[in-house]
Image (cartoon, rainbow, N blue to C red; front, side, top):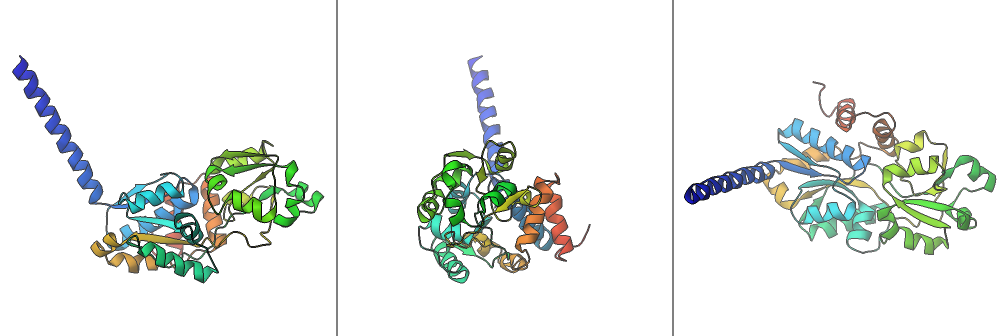
Length: 298
């Protein structure tokens, strides 16, 4: 009886090992596209993935909603994913703690820095998605708020709703408050998707939105100007592991087709289709590729 149990255990163990090795093999045999836990990152990942699948016929494995930028970056540098969309300012300031410059300087620094980690930064998609502050339009009009400097004079009466990552990252809240001498009544951390609900329910008074947020198109909010240009350029672009490019060199040409193809308005519209209209990310990505003439309708 004991021998039979041992044999059964051995068979089960062998079967599990076989299944696990199969899963690992299948994953490594696929091109792994990662994305952060926000709509825009997932859309960009799907745009890249569908284009690659159409042009090269590669099997795409989407690893979506991995977390904030640092989580996705760690997955990239530790060979858990092959391709991601990311942002120049985030790469230079947050990952490498270097000073950004103009858009061109920040892009050049991005390419230089990631190359040291065996990653290639390709050309930008064409839009800059930076941080901003947004608050009720009527309130902003009443107080005459147009810029961050205007807001600094009254900020102590406002509760900020901010994504958790913004509260801690070097190019986020600490430096921003110091630059503009801003002190909030309170700061509430939350997921990006909750910010617009929170300000709509008067749980917070102002939010740290992104300039390409789809909700800005329908929310009655005023977006304030960064009059001291505190925030660096955040131009979105594809990052690809060098090892992946060595295996699939055609990727550089295929992803290069997206260079300059998405401006701020187009990205905001795509974000809005998902966040406001409830469209599936896959359909939004496909619609963009078809309308851009990059893939054919099937």
